[in-house]
Image (cartoon, rainbow, N blue to C red; front, side, top):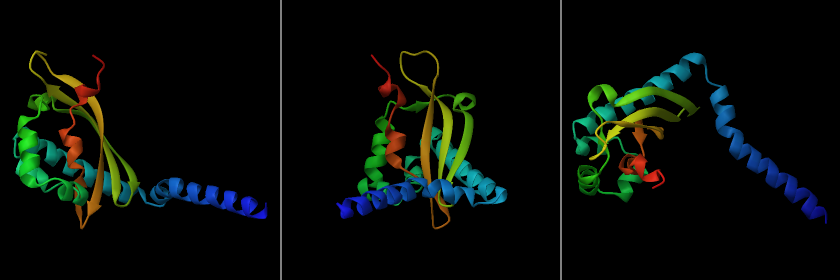
Length: 157
C-alpha cells in the first residue's frame, strides 16, 4: 500500500517534467534568442520551399533530419517528390502567413499556409501546415516525409 502512495506521485512528477520541459526551456530564452531561432527556422523553411518550387529535390534532401535520411535514400526521396501530386502553387501563392514557434533552443515549429495545385482544381487551394524543424550542427533540418504528404489527402471525400 505504501509503495502505491510513493510510485504514483513520482510517476505524475516525471510525466509533468517531460511534458513541461519544452515550455520551461523556451521561457528561459531571451527575446533576442527567440527571434534568432524563429528567423533561422523560417529561413531554412523558405529555402526548402524555394528548392521545392524549382524541383531541386536532391538539394532538399540535404535539409532532411538524420532520421529521415536514414529511413529514405536520396534517390527514393527525389523520385517520390517528382511523382507526387503535391505541386506547389505559382510563386505569389506558394506561402502565406508564415510564423515560427520556439519549442526549445534546438526545436521549432514552422506554421505556414501553403498553396497547392492539382489537376482539375483550376486554381490553387490553401492548407495550413505545421512543420517541425530541428537544429543539428548549426543547420535547421526537417522531417522529409512531411514534404511527401499531400494535405488534400486528409480531406473527406
